[in-house]
Image (cartoon, rainbow, N blue to C red; front, top):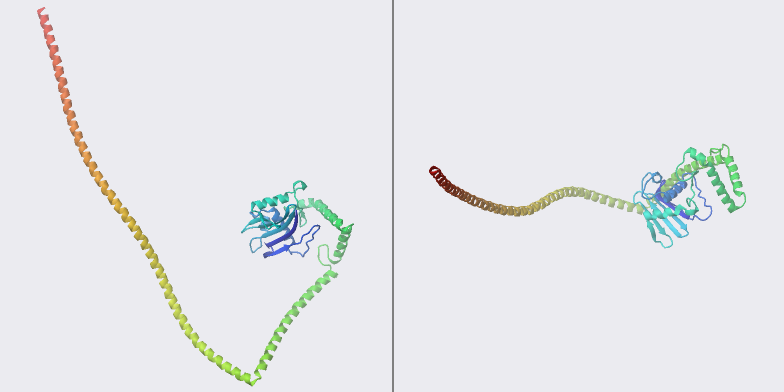
Length: 391
């Protein structure tokens, strides 16, 4: 994978504006600018674009957001064996992730599918743990390091610098990289101290002093130029006015114009008084209109409420009529039930009377049968007694 362009919008110091790094080619590409110019910001944005999901806001993403807020937008153009693509991510509001084919302009993936596409790019496969090597502010790796870990990685950084030096020497030939570095260090030591401060009496310190002096002179001269330009404009206007005043005809015309302007001013003043009166009347009318509108709104609301109550009253009347009908039917049903109960009680009493008479009849029949049996037993007993007496 090769990165050919990087674009940022609303990232850190670039609030509400964008910055682009285009034309990244093969070989060694050098990004050179003064301190606080956005170099580290560009690499932090590149890191977030490839390693931070668009749906989250971890610490690395929060650092990209400007103090004024907003939604950081990151974009990179890349080239792979499959073609040329553009990766775009936006964090916070309107968060999104997209992958576009630069050859056809077609949207290939978005959201989680775009994140999976990026993950396949940086996985590296059999070529290594990742297809990218990160060296950020003298630190290898992506995550933060403690001082002890940084000390332990000095050898790694030294190996990395030797590797880069070898790449440069392979392009330029020989040991020119070491010679250039040595010459640059010697020239730098003549101008600044080991802490980076300008050496007193050196060319760099003198140049800085001269620059500050020239800047002060520039500011002073700019203020003088401004004063002189204003004075020259006033002089030109005065000369032009003076030339106009020297003519008698122009003087008469000016007097006529002044008289006409005065008459216009008086008419405007009278009109202004009328206008003030009309504005007061208009204000009163507006207040009355507003009051009438409020009363109309109240009346319309009451009318709507009365209409709703009327509709509800119709429904309630229908319900009441239905309830009265059901009540009348219930009363009739109760009366009929009472009559049925009375008839049932009468039938029950008659049945009880019949049952009592039947019981009396059954008892009388049983008593008659018993009397007959007793008479027969008595006759037999008398016959036996008579037989005993005869015997």
